[in-house]
Image (cartoon, rainbow, N blue to C red; front, side, top):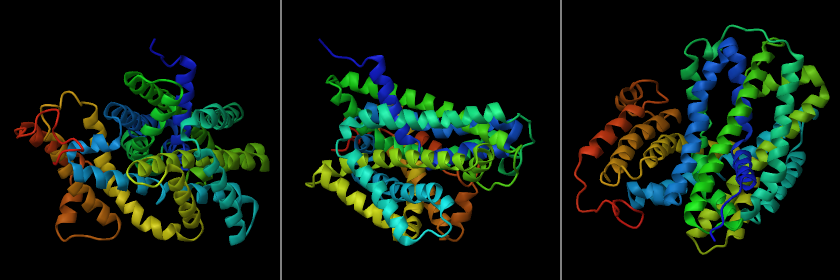
Length: 443
């Protein structure tokens, strides 16, 4: 008899995925959105939901349908799949988010209580942070036992406690939108959600979620795919609930203090005014949990992938990434950000196009050129944009491409659509519909 996931197990896996998604950036964006958008915050949240929730959930679904990221990226060619997958795992993992999670949690949990933290204190904190991370990563198939049953629910509960407390004790006043949200709230929310770059994280997390489902005794491939999709939807619902709650906290914060330049300031102002030093400690705990769970998810997914393409074991990759991330969180983070952020800016639009195309797997079977043409057009524009963000411009070309509507951040949208149209009308060539551009075949 075929074993299926029960409702409790699906919810646990969904909470696990939610906790992996919800890092420090996810905690900061919604309160600042509410703070700036004021009485029109829900319009901002609508745009934010499209790119910070729906796109990542679609990414999880795409990975479930294609088995893993290499197979999805392989639709655009074998060489592209290898390069893109390696860059995706490294840039969002050990070269950016993992060391930055440790650094950010230190800034939010330790610095408020120590006027001039020494390098020794930072080293001790990072040792503890990465030591715990490593222990949680040893058995990636059991993350539902740690993140799903313990850390995730605690993180979720603490954030909702803060939100409810603020809603009860701070009177609501509808303030006029200001700053970046003074006009076009939906578009600005869309752009801020885009900046979370959770779609790439979702591409990385898919395999770990499937691994946990298999560990629960689910052997049938269709059940694993179905369970992964359901977990993605549950994670998306939880993200929306928390984002909406944190956004409302930001709206209320505007009635207490107008002095805030980011989401961390917003949370500190309102929670500190209500609970004093205890509130700051509570926020510190929330930041540490958010950073820790995301760090664990990234370490597991990165180590799992690189173990699958090399002779090194999963455990050795975890150790390598943990040690290197520890070192970068202490001394080399600024330098590595100068490299990893432009790479992320270059590959993120490509990731979003892959995810959207991945939703039409069956319909595109007879149009295999859609993938490479869409990726080619998107990639050219996104690379130029990434170079520009790093201070490198190409005469005429940079200005021309970055002027494509709707905004410089989304200048790749129209080229992506153009690539899809061209790929659709191009003949399939010698490749059959099922063989076209699989990882094992040449582009």
